[in-house]
Length: 356
Image (cartoon, rainbow, N blue to C red; front, side, top):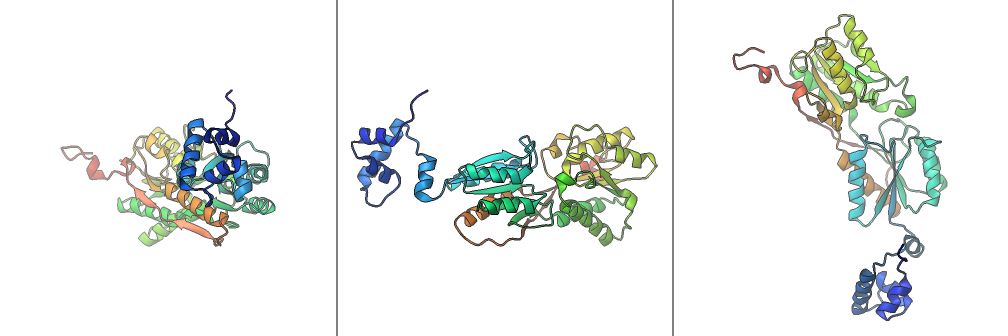
């Protein structure tokens, strides 16, 4: 393995003292521009990389951010993290990801471990227990921002989407297609409490569903609320809870899936009962995850602005790192309807002779 290039190596090659090299690379004002450029050119030619630890000792910062994600695999947080990586890099910070899945003690335990990691602050994505994570951050004086809509408790500046407004938009779209018997397929928070905290986003999406029905004068039917277990398992062939409801003979002409990941199994369940999408049943999801375009027909959905949320998380965290005050409250981003073929209108499905 090649030996690491040191300041002493740069000093010898540039024929200046080690202190001069350090000041030149650190933009110290008492080094002439000619010397600064010569030292930097030599450092580049030798492949010198400055020590993050040494820089931290000198400046009090590592220029590094940690982000805690729910899992090491793919998930809704992927575009958030990708945008955060880019935003951090643009201002000279690098970002390290730490998955929670399989970690004893969850996100709070990871925060405790960050005391031994070169990091200036942390973005926590998905925080069912904000109290525990906040206490861990306080113990090691680590600035933190949350991207989370699972908990009513807000102990950090917390970024999320406008879930209630987005759900209302989804159901209003279904109503505009003439649909009236609209089911809501949602995660069963009674079973999934470890993942969903107190179910804030599910409650808000349910409220948005009801808001749209009320505005249209459609009576709320409790039997059309279908709670499903293991909602993010996209390999499921069907939803037994939906199957049980359809087996009673209930008529459904539309469905709002509270998460895109639930739509694939919903489509398969409907087909097993002889129902076509969108001819018989129109479906809208929520999130605009990758799952929305991997199903057939592709899913009309409510888009969360994940990239903007990731960038704003970095912006808020850097402000905290620099000592600025950032209000501890929820920062909600506007959602939008993305129309795809799962809600094609009848006239678009008609054959040339006018039949369907």
